[in-house]
Length: 220
Image (cartoon, rainbow, N blue to C red; front, side, top):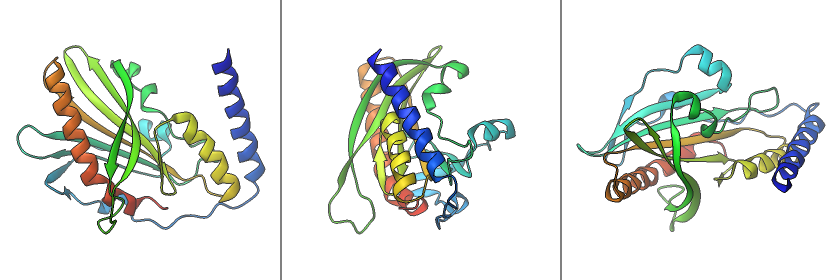
């Protein structure tokens, strides 16, 4: 009951904040399009994935997106999806990856968060910690590690509830509702702890290479 009340309260506050700001014209942040996103991230080399279908794009409502596979040697692969919403006022809003998993046949096996030290830019003197979601999912005999987070205005959050709270706060404070969802998927080669640990290590290594470049394409 308390959880439902909390969700309802957040929803009401979100709606109130967005309606209050509806009469104001939202600025369009300057950013580089994902079409120019580099294929090489450290020792990871990218390959384009098939574009999303029109009906999927219509449901997502993204203004720009990136979907690729990156490889580093014969045993290291990471799938990357980044969806960017320029505004979330007119019905376009970030969808949690968890909403799509059951429909695609994936079942979540475990859920936790993971803290990763990353560099915001190549010139940053010290790393900072970001907290992201860590899921293990399974479809048949196939298992994957899913790492994802929400990012807006230089802020990185794992919690979907926190991302909604900041959406309202930034709409009121900055008159901006732009944000992004970043998802990294890594295959788990075998059903044992060692394979899971290897997938996590590779996912973390990829995110460390990705993060300094990604921030260039997401307005702060």
